[in-house]
Image 1: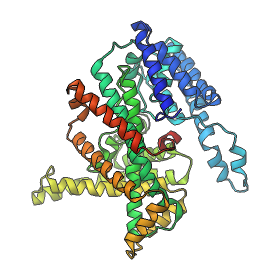
Image 2: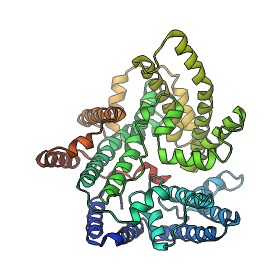
Image 3: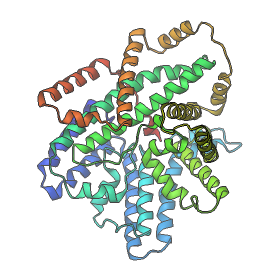
Image 4: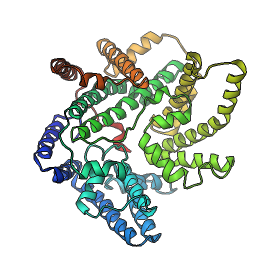
Length: 479
């Protein structure tokens, strides 16, 4: 069940009615039933695989409550990570073993449940924090199952922490008109970002990355920048829909993005991009390895190891591993260059918050991030290296004609391109306002009902008229 499909919204409305029709203390039950039904549509086998993680985590959390034995922590971690590694990485591992030529045939029947990386990391966080006495485990198995399977966030996150999410799930929430209005607005905005912007960007991005015919400076830069926007509008679009759906039940999911392309250095980028994953990596990889407590060399090695895990978490491909290592390296370089930048600014009296300094830092950071996205998007290392090589192919002949051919061959006609430019402009304005902590949804909630109704109608008409038909699944659903 794709969350941009009409069937999802019928499902959401039915669950919403059941939720508010149920007595307050029992409102978690419709959410659990709805979550099971939602995931069932991803495949019964996938539901069974996920159930193993849920049951394993629950049993060992109760054992940890009685005795804080390390074996009660290590064993479920091995089981949960083992399931994820087997499902996601068996094909990759076999394909890199000399003499095995039929890795795809061997692994073709392996089930890879949607969102396995997300719910595995959520389960691991739950167990580790119980082991550290952060909170007591949930005794009610059904309630715990809801925490793991809550349908808005199970496929692409955010990766929720138990202390933040569980009270909202289990205690029941009274109907809040403002939250429901904000929820609907978030859903509409998320659908627009996915179906109107991301899908159209994907047409051009695919033409650049997948054909090998556009490997010159202009097209490589265009491909990297457009992919950066495609990935962000796609992923944040899902998060908007998920957060909006949860908000309709009075549940606030943890924020997962904070205008990442306004970041002023690579560390700032990771504080703004996929925030729940960044926090998870910090708390369960970087800090346990020693963080910054054991000297500069150890700190840098910890950074590199953490970003390597981030890369491999995203998928079974050398491109993701290289992407993770790349971010580890530029994160390390950032620790050296940041103090140098501070000295230069102080020497020449450059204001850190001034326009020129801010713009320079944002542009250079975005350039570094976009360079990494080339590896992230490429199908293999050879394609990525050819794209990098193309950066130095300064062929600017017939750019306009080549661009027209690229767009036309990939389904983006002139009118579609103009429409995309208009919606990208709207997107940039909203992002800038968010960066300035001005949230349009807060303004709309306070508007008269007639104005809000007009906004809803215009939004629906926009989605009906301008959404790309037959759009693909969300990109992060594969991770």
